[in-house]
Length: 321
Image (cartoon, rainbow, N blue to C red; front, side, top):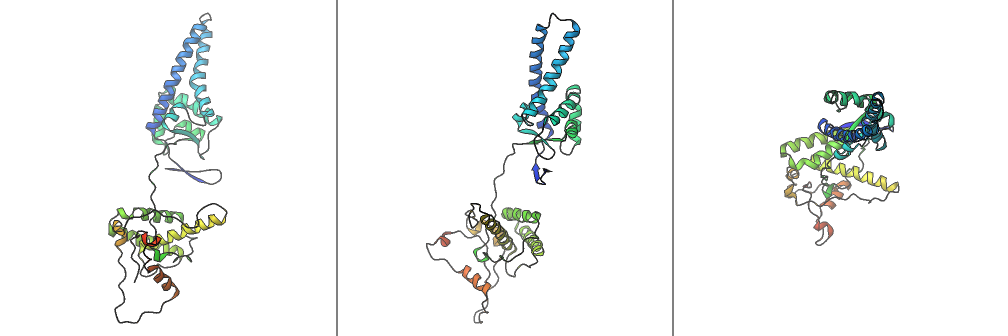
């Protein structure tokens, strides 16, 4: 993956084309160009039979330059980097900043391509592509261009599991401004893949990510809350803030985030790796109930039968006693 930066300082992630796909695209272009060159040459030979030898040589050179050099340059300019071979393989020539190429870019690529592709049978182009980190040939280097893949298979989207209901709104006062995007990405990747990890490995990763997140927010992880549940709750809080901010700007988005339906908790062994804290012994007086504990106890209350909350599947997080 190659990160390009546009003129507006926007980072773009483009996938550079590899040498096999580029070579096949060039081969298709050359087959079409040589077929057109042969047809035009035959027509010109028949039509210029009455001319002298010098004139026929001049016509042959002009035909070579127009068909094998000028035509590819014109095609790349008019199609914004999509020749016939590149269009067939899902490739495209773009500038280093990710924008479409212009005539000067296509001219430099075509002029240098005569030497590194036509005259040397592509040997120089292959060597330059293998040496370059982004697979660029000499024409791309001097023109400031890059061949990228346009058709990339999209992976199936993974959903972040929602936190347990008793953590809803628990972290509304956290300061998330100092959390970098890289840490958010690592947390989301962990939450979407923790069911595939070994329970011990998953627990260690959750503890490390929770410690990094707590350090960035300046608030320690509350006692009795599993690290995975803490990460899921903070991610949900961040999503809720983004939705409220977008809704305040006048966009038509839902006021609350929606999540997919998840099966019962036994499907998520990573959640079950965190047991609930032991309950208080019988006969002891209950501890004073504060505002946070009241909200937590309200979240623990069992919903009425037939209600929407009663039909909602469990997330697998065990609430603290």
